Length: 264
Image (tube, rainbow, N blue to C red; front, side):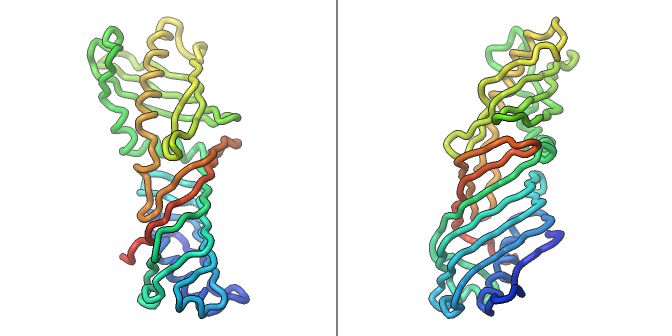
């Protein structure tokens, strides 16, 4: 499942308790992702005798080149907790069980290429096919509309350029080109707001149709990009801030960790 697992069990000054925990935690974290380039798990518990009471000083995970549910690539993901309580008996049996849920500071980095790859996933494309668009019957003739070839280009100031094609029956495809702001709603949903249509990129005779379909595409996307659809087993992400930086989209927030995945 993993291309590589990198722990810190042999670092100088790391005692037997930390070594055991790093090994067990790495195996548990491995079940969160379909694949990865690297995952670095660091658990601190000093002295190791605190394990007998199930007390860990801190838990930190740094991952690179991750793939979630075989469809959604993540360039970087990290989360770090403060003190955590675990069931020590679960460690001895090769697992890791929390005595109570905990929260961690979380950071996620997506690339422009990774976002575009995610738009090709079946889970996404199927939700953009054969859409009925009430209010646009004069344009669609009552026929369903499918949006394909969705691509984004990241811009400064949390802006993106969005490109797509709209298909209505046997009519020629209608290009969609617009810029929009990406925002966080309720800490879990990504919303596309303040659209500006790039008229010069669309033939004049279909610009009005393109603008109408552009808004319909945004409405469809705004109802779809919800982090709860992509939660990891036992880990729920919540976002506080995001930023477009060169070819990356960076999120900061926190992770609610209810449990580690069971050994498979």
